[in-house]
Length: 400
Image (tube, rainbow, N blue to C red; front, top):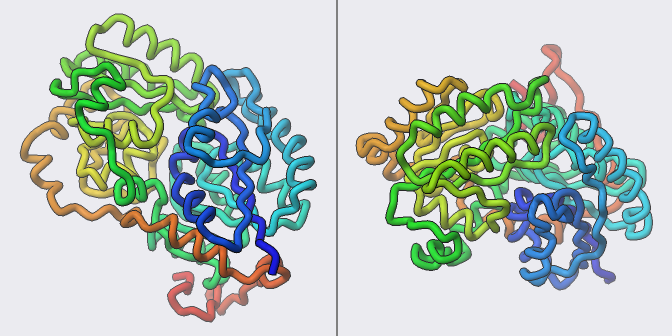
């Protein structure tokens, strides 16, 4: 039997950190030929040219696809999708993989999904069924779900949402979030190693800031000023992470550079690889911002997290997350609550709803065994009962 060809696409440091262990596990499968496609912010010097990290990790790259427009607007985002589609049509048209593996909800993912659909390439999608009502990511994620043929969901609730969209139950597997595999399977840098790498004194109380533009708002930085005013009131050391390449990211970067330049105990980091980022979260006292890592990953470290504004609205939360509106005084009060010994003690024994660190194995094993051909490609329209609910062969998939 010939190897089945699995193409995997990554656009940025964010999704690469999630894809690392699925990629590793796929390469261990003797009957799978992995083809890695690298695009988007990975190839941008402005965002750290993180394609170099992929090469250092030893993953062979099939194609590097330039598409990220040098822009800071929603029009630039839309044009990036178009440029990616044009280039990916050539690459995927040549490769013709048996399956294309995509992850999450970045707007750039619409390009490979649309291209694969036109080329009759089945799509496997990781992290469908989640919710982030305050960003265009939410609509992108749901669109990817309906365009995909196999689904790896991060939680059981997410699995039920995908089933509620009319997907056949055999196509929907709860894998957990693959980013959590790092904690279970890799040794993180020690405190001293991390201090030397980042040039930070991690004996000081440190707050990590991971804040991104809110892409569903006309002014994507409408909430940002309250965040920076709250940060100015904090006496703690601040490690500020670069935002995603979204509309408004350049203005946000300039504001972060100005803020960090005025404080001796604040540093802006263009790119932190997944192990460095995890280690920083492990050593931090608190995570502040509106990043998905504050929802999905911080519970595994029992790290108090202040989640600001509407971007992550609707996502499942563990007890470590404190949700606040973008108001300076409220943010400041939430930080003090999160740093209190009473709050931290209440997080002992907490379970992360996003998984246990085995997602990479589940994803790779499924992709190696799932039947190919018409069974995978042709999606069955489920019948409806008299109440308009989907009728599943598997009763766990009933839409209630």
